Length: 410
Image (cartoon, rainbow, N blue to C red):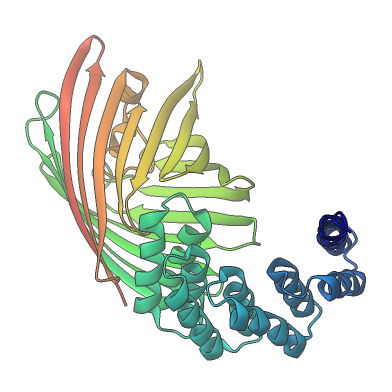
């Protein structure tokens, strides 16, 4: 008899281990049925069988709630999620699952209640904060949504889903925007007088994409001039969107007489984006410039590498630019650094120099920028740049650019 009690404990331990292992095996089979076979009824049956032996296995019960959600059985899903929340009030995934259930079923007020209750128990939960921003956006409480998603990005700037959401919140919260910018350009040798450039634009978000109208004023070569531009960013699909632009001026030399541009953008996996297109400038002759770029988000950084190729009779002129941004907050909060060679047809400060042969000579530039949102709907930009330009063969000059801008969404 003295061995009966130890043997009984050993037997019970083995039985418990078999049951726990069986629950894990059934859970693995249920996940395989759901994700590999898309067989939700089979996955539900396996999950329920696992819970018969391990009724307090929270991971399985939350997974069952998600299966009911995907099977469009919201009442059963609510029961599963709430059972976990009642027994384990700090179980994050249960609040996330129930919150998304209500959000996807157009019950955003209920979803907000669930999320707020979850954050009381798990105040540092990133998934719950991200869901709260989505719900507030759906409720048109955009300033609150912006504050929440900005907090998420501050703690995790590499979260591309949050950055994409922040952009949508900006678009939804303000269909309109106006901006004003001023640039002062100083030359130590190339020109005797500095250049001044002022731009005013108005943009509106539409269901087809954004449209921006712009008026540019410049004083260059002691001459005043105006240019009128229209930019459009039509959405083609979830993967593709385009850039279409055109401009006209009656002061050739201060601005090109005509300008145009087109690019096709593709959103690629792993937070990459690719672009290919062309630019067109007409002064007294036509100049065609082809461009391609690739962009990538990595943690708190955004990188873009671009090239411009300009064919001529004897050769193809090439220029390159590398731009990086460091995000320290929301989508409008970053420092930028740009390094480049040659001139850009997209840069109104200096693209007028493409009217001569100087763009074929050596040129190197660097610029620093700062962009900061203020109370959600206001954005301040500052910029300083330096160019070392070979404007005649073996003759170089320096160029300093200072810029300031203000944008208001409404």
